[in-house]
Length: 362
Image 1 (spheres, helix red, strand yellow):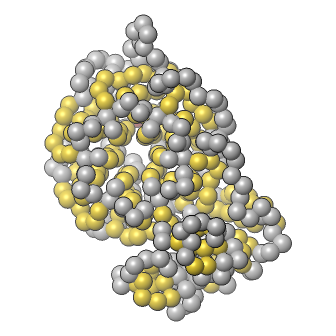
Image 2 (cartoon, rainbow, N blue to C red):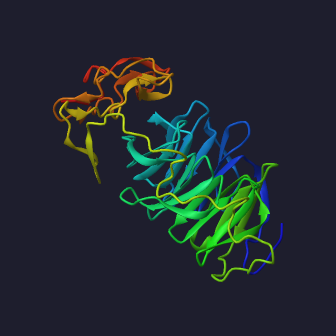
Image 3 (cartoon, rainbow, N blue to C red):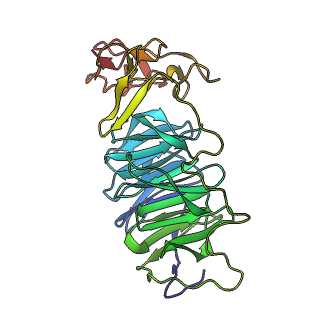
């Protein structure tokens, strides 16, 4: 890998992985065998319990992962707690700022408690910075950026299959050719080397870690100069492989998707969804208005994976009255071998006696 005073200066480190996430003090990764490893900066890799295919750590040390069944887990310091929902990728900005994308490319956000709110747009991969900056790429490899849950999606030039963001000013992408690009002076800069997954763990790219197609791990330490290297003749200044993508103001790949309940008017506030008007009642808090349960979590009744109606609303998608989360089961509705769990968890034993499996009390 090449070196330059104004480009990433790669050094190989020990270990092997397929997905990696870093902050200023530590690294988390998963390997091809779905094993989870952790190390402090400059330390040795230590195997952690569990299995995962995707992992992300915030600057404050909050770490979440996803396993091969799309189940979501949060690290407690000694083990993993399963969280509600199902996801393919996850972006953790802090303990109170978590974003996911699922198998349908839907985007959801929660404040660290697993009470997910659906966000507009569609994406195959997502990342969140420590200042609330969110970036994602859709199935057409178009890149989008927004400022927190109350922001809006703005498309950036270029294309990427994976993005990682530290804050509004420091983010990095990998394109379908495994080329690496940083963003400086509002310009994409092609960095030396190639990788399949990359993470930025400090402001102004002072720490970057990535793994290549051979699963080898490389890292860069030291801030980059603000002024990038000027591209040579014929070199693209943004990670586009063919034609420049059409501009959209949200990360949908085709047409808009209508909400499941078209009669519901929503106001997205800091506490989540509040109902402005709905003649049928409030959106069901357990299934977020989807009405059904599938093998990987709550889903619409029209979903081919639908198995049974939601326990809280009995499939009607709405409830009357204002519900509060059941503290006995932490809003999950069921009790399992290892404590509170969702209705679809294989460890479930029976419904929570306090809320009769609803997850919420009225």
